[in-house]
Amino acid sequence: MNNFKRRHIIILLGALTTLGPFSTDMYLPGFAAIAFDLNSPIAHVGLSLTSYFIGICLGQLIYGPLLDRYGRKKPLITGLVVYIAVAILCGVVLSVASLIALRFMLALGACVCIVASRAVVNDLFSHSEMAKIFSYLVVITGISPLLAPSVGGAITTYLGWRCIFFVLALIAIIMLLAVIKKLPESKRPDKSVSLKLNNVLAGYNDVITESKFLIFTVAGGFAYAGMFAYIAGAPFVFMELFGMNEGQFSIIFRINVCGFILGSQINSLLLRKCKAYNIAFLGSYLLVAAAILMFIHFLLGLLNVVILVVFLFLFLFLIGFIFPNVTAIALAPFYNNAGRASALLGCLQMILGVTATVLVNVFVDGTPKPMIVVMLGSAFICMALISYYEYNLKDKVTISNTVTN
Image (cartoon, rainbow, N blue to C red; front, side, top):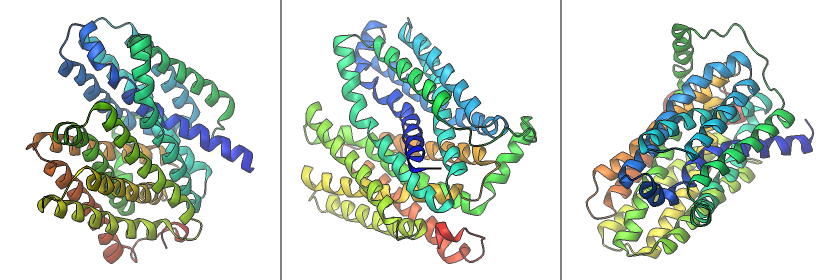
């Protein structure tokens, strides 16, 4: 594969991974308008976000076997067609109940982009390249929370919230055409992959019983959970406790997202000389150290806006080093069932991320403590899992030396 084609494939895969974040971040500024137009409380509109996350989790498990059975392109094209149709229906919906149901269906279309992108990376690139490619994808995906809310807010203001879904459908149409014309089929259809429920479950069991997959998937999931805890707690902490307005909070949110992007970009440079496993191992310890220091500052009453932003930036910066690497290590053992491995990885990590948001909201106490404690706990478990592998399993498991040694 020449560099020109390689670059275009990476950009296309990165673009596909942005469809999910755009589907959530773009319509958030329209919540008030949606509630008013559909004569419903904003809390009920918020359930459409919950149904979307449920759809993302379940949908990935559905598409995993399909991607292994029919190749990568056909399920990807099917999912995008579903997404386009449902996005249009979301734009003409007449009730919140219908919107909640349609958002679930929208997620079933969007999630194939996430699963297929990871599987294609596993198909086309060597184990030594995978972590670097995932770092590039994180950089591209990280642009979504920087752009999507502003775009969604502008569309809501000038065109109305319904046009957000029409724009999402247009984006998906462009992606569909790009997939059809530019994305090579990276895996031939495999009729030996059975779609019977018992066989599907057996296939997932084969994946989850691979110790390296399970440890690094869950470790990455807890790193992901730390980021979700920040996302869930930051609006209350900065706007309610520190009295910032929406514009000021938006600036801080973007600064911290840039930390995540910067960490991922530097990670891709470090991978030229360092192994993915070594970076993830060291990064997990630094992540815990950053979280502990943030917690100590909270206990001592030293947290102000500037100090908190510095710690949050550092926390997300370090996740940028951990997440792409543990993803590459987790998927490295798989080829024929890479679709199922990618699906299970995404589902488990999404469940952990959503659980973190629930914990932050359930234990809210009028201070930053719930957010900080969940971030600290997530970082510690991530470190503990990678350390367990280092000191108990590393020498007992057959590992691709180019990835982990």
